[in-house]
Image 1 (cartoon, rainbow over the protein chains, first blue to last red):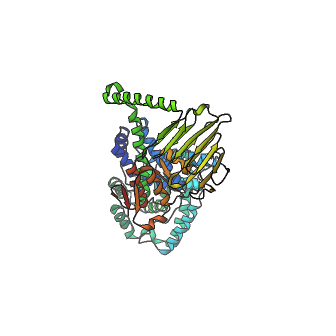
Image 2: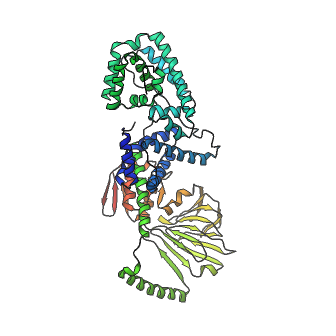
Image 3: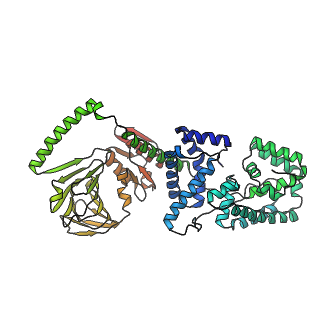
Length: 211
Length: 332
């Protein structure tokens, strides 16, 4: 993830930009372009299209900066703008019904994260199975998980970025958690003492504090 | 708010919890630590929940620094362009600029004189563009010719009234020819004659070769050596310099007329081809020290508004250093 700004910093940077600061505009690009690029590339596997849309997006916000509304989460704001722009472009390209999920080539691939020391080989196997299950979810649902669990958007923001209801977001999160629960149940039965290992809590904290 | 009744799933669904796992801050660390001190029986559940949240981790493809630098350059270039366009609108009235007024008067007198002479001689009008400049010319018959940098267009007088409309081109131009009942339009180049009724096409006569790319409509082409080849939209005709033979090939027309909007499309063009066109546009020389670069395939657009910027951008895309010696840019 790109460096974290506090909501107050988001507001300040965005306001500076809206008031015409070129410096703030540069910062916006430096902070968010890579993240936008990744999201765009997950949605359409076409670098040229993603770049064209990003190009248009940054030109558009620069040109209309005085007319833009306030935000305390610039990532959310730009993600929504980029997604709409990509949807427009893709829609124009395939002229499909707009209710369809247009991002045919979207690929949100869940992958295993680095394992902690306390985990056993067996658990790793279980985890890979769960990840495979999660990857079988429909693309649209995986996009929701991506926005919430990877990009730290709130449910409301994820719903707005994707133009869907809050209900769909909740449902998706529930489905994902059910899948995960199945994994933990088996790991309890088979791995047993995993969660009670005395050192595990400490190790988690050391990891978190070291960032 | 998280409380002592929270289950593993409740934690996983809590946006604050997710944020903390994804990107902990001092503040959130403090919060969750004190939460665990307060509810020790929840520690195991929190552990599990952390594991859940971390399992949902997506593979991401990172854009290269080069991609991002190129994109940034593209955005900033366009912003500058937009701003210089709006800047030129704010012009001080001419009467507040004595020098301009004087120059304008002289120019007016001169052009009346020249125009009169031209009219008397029933000759032609000549348009010429400098390096790096593009000019749009509206002809009296309603046709529009966009003249690329370093090019010359000669236009026969009294276009609108003639049965055959004729122009002569050296360099590169894009023609948008207005239809006129029965009146043919002929573009003469050093190697060929291009005959049309009404259509859009690009003609490039640089480097001893005439290239014609047809956007729409129909075009008839002839040379001293070969009579009448008919082109269809999307055709590119190349007239070879010595034999004056015409060869047709299918192309994407917009790859060849992007210069009108001050950029070139790099896709599918060889680096030498790109360098040739930059040299012709800016009147500079570009040398490649690393001969391996020749085989490099490029994609994307390159703005050609300002010579320096354009060449800098090309060097960024190629990931090489550029050095300027006089009029020669050396890539290495």
